[in-house]
Length: 131
Image 1 (cartoon, one colour):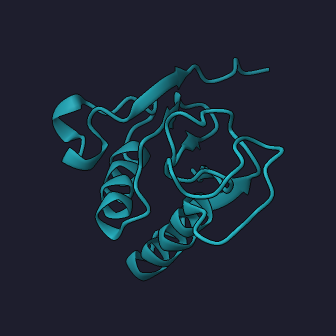
Image 2 (tube, rainbow, N blue to C red):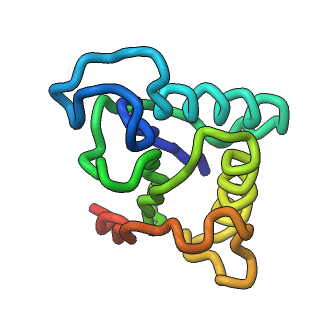
């Protein structure tokens, strides 16, 4: 079953750039795009073919950059924030994605969460009902 990670491409750490939110113009140093690129690279080197990375201009969680939405058909979805565009944060997220992919429901036991994702959950989104 495939997993999709949507990264807010316009997220950036406080103090970088002048605008905020979806109306802001892109400029160098935007960390959401950097996070997405790092994530794609780590996933490719880990051979995680079941995970697809997409981006969205704004996930409207500007107070918690960088923000990602994890989703998969039939599984609980999650929004995580405060993810720095650093390899260690990306590797922690990839570790969580592996644990997420090993579940049927998308619910990962807390003991299996990598340290780098603890405290970063913003929202839990129920799977849509089967139709």
